[in-house]
Length: 364
Image (cartoon, rainbow, N blue to C red; front, top):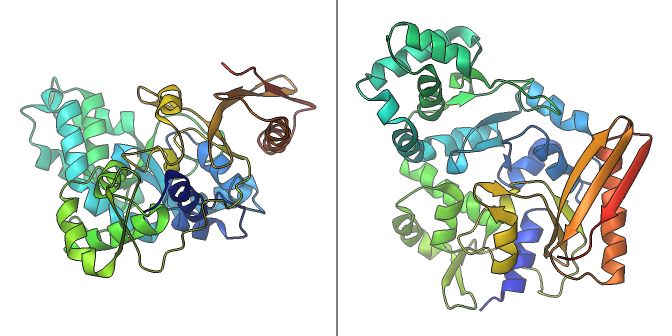
């Protein structure tokens, strides 16, 4: 049986959050199995908090040279992944993304021949052509009087393997999402049984030990109980405090529950906060209700391996301010560690600021 604390330490180790490590950017992103990239800056903060020597240009270069690609992935959200991982996992997610398209835009695309739509979109994006989602939607609507360009653009994003090339996804770069076809990655339209198996094993390597429900929560992929049963002879099993069965790779490390865990600042939507159906290994249910509000998952601070606060940063002219909002009482030594780490994060995110201030609010 593994306690929630032991499971939390396992997650922190595999997600490079127990201690900073000296890995190249692409290897680090592969180790944690992708980074949420709904906004451009969170992957940079995620790597800063995990790597010993990380500079903004390290990730920007990997995006620009296409070692890492940004695309609609797990849970139909934007992620940054290596090309091999994108090629492995994106086809497995196709049924999920088809369902998301039907739920979100089925009515607005009723009567439209989706096969013809996707073929035309693929043609428009041939030979490396890049179009923004609004541009592509308008071009597709020209041949479909009365069609909703927005719905057409989003439909293509969900149903066609696309990547969003640089400068999209690079530091402080916002604006319309550019589309480029992902055929250059060697991606196949349908996943094989072996790809599904490999995805489950990669998930366990990055987030295990975990239940079948946890893997489903991370990926959104149905039919995983059967996959786990086929894999059972190759896996090690545990139980959690509630008596539920957990699966893991046989040689995967599980650190002791009392392993020290340093203060870590996580960006919004950081994967360990979303990778489980049961999130109590990193935060209590009471804390989760304050961190996960609707579709929003706040940026958080880990103290002794669990979520202890949320944080936000802002800047005006030459002054940068990072505000920490504790969700539980912190010991004086923990407060000092949080403030020191916040100062380092401010120096990373706002290097040109002449004044930087950390504000630690009173516990609510």
